[in-house]
Amino acid sequence: MRAWTFGFTVTALLSAWPTAAAQSGTGRFVVVPYGWAWFLFLFTLSVLMVGLCGYLYGRATKPMKAFRTAITWSKHLFLWVAVLLTLYPVIYLVGVSFGRSNALASIPPREGNLLVRAGVLPNPADFSLVQYRRVLADTHLYPYQWGLLALFTAAALLFVLLSLARRSGKEGWVARLQRLSGWIMLAAVALLVVTLSAEQFYTLDASGQRRRASSGGMMVLYIRNTLLVSGMTGLFAVLISTTAGYAFARMRFEGRYGTLLAFVFVQMFPSFMALVAIFYLMNYLGLLNTFTGLILAYSGGAIAFSSWIFKGYLESISPNLEEAAMVDGATRWGAFWRIILPISVPMLLFIFLLQFIGTYSEFLLANVLLTSNDRWTVGLGLRALASNALATQWGTLAASAVLGSLPILVIFYAFQNALSAQYIAGGVKG
Image 1 (cartoon, one colour):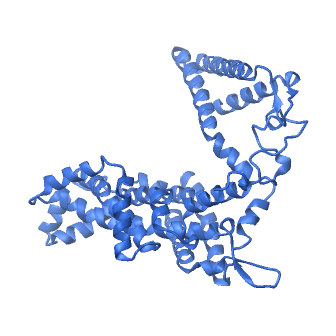
Image 2: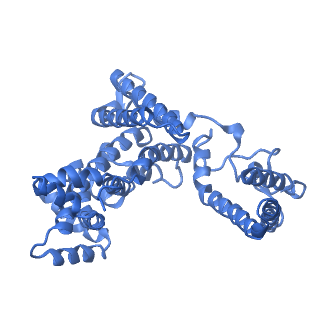
Image 3: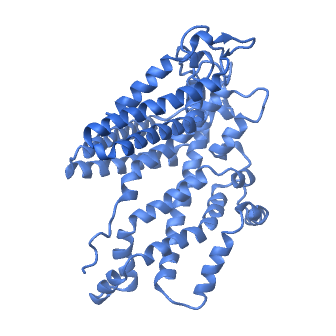
């Protein structure tokens, strides 16, 4: 009822936009006199109309709460508009990536929807996959890699369908099959990341000789590099934070309090203050322009924060679980391995995702340590595409940015249930 009212109101008000008042400006875009005033007027009118519908609905269902229902409906419309305005740059970027031209704004049509004529929304008539074909044209996969890609696609579709089935109330074998499809997706991506190499990104000249692809044609390699670095950093962060956090939460030893204070003190300083020291250290160790050096630099910065988070999580878990296991003959390590780690899966996933996302979008440290373009990450590749302000291929840049953001979206959707699961419910008897 509420969603139908919102949609009807917004559609009716957009159709009432003063198209007759629109006039072609001297430039390429349409100019609406006092457009901002019309927008505020229509937005206020839509909020009042939705509030009136909510009030009438409240009077019919809950007369004592009719006014509260009207306020709630109006607030929901305001929040939806705020969300759409916040996501507008993303929507526009996706629209540019599906455009035919390599410009941020193409020539708008003279007729049609006012928002399209004004350049606010992309023109549907310009829809094309040419930008994505341009980005992927220089990528050459081996037959077995195409098989892994097909396996990942099939597992992803199965995962989405099973997620919809679970929302309808089906559990049991559906949940087990969904977990299996998730593991298949993870294995396929891991094999693709390991087997993909820089030699597979090339173009052929007039004589048939291979030439290394440009920065715009190596975006898949940059995504592979970023997945490799971010994945290994997340695994190292989980490995280090679990052991260090458990020691700080369960054990009492000399220097424990001072070390915890040092962890908090380190977090007060921005990470770029250590760039010179990290560069000198990696140069001394011969790890410049290597994934190993970048992973070690990222992992070192994750120790303090990840350990502190895991320590706080363990302190919320009753030690009765470990004590009961040690009474039954388990060692301290056995209680940690068989009791603490299984019930800490949501927090371990949170730590992994936190470090994965933080390193996936990191630019400054990667720009200092990585020099050759075949080892660049997504951020460095996008920077290279946008480095020439007068000849930037905005369509290729937008398509590359959309492709680079897909792994983050897939990871969030795949792990959203695991992050919210409660593994310790009922673990301790009262």
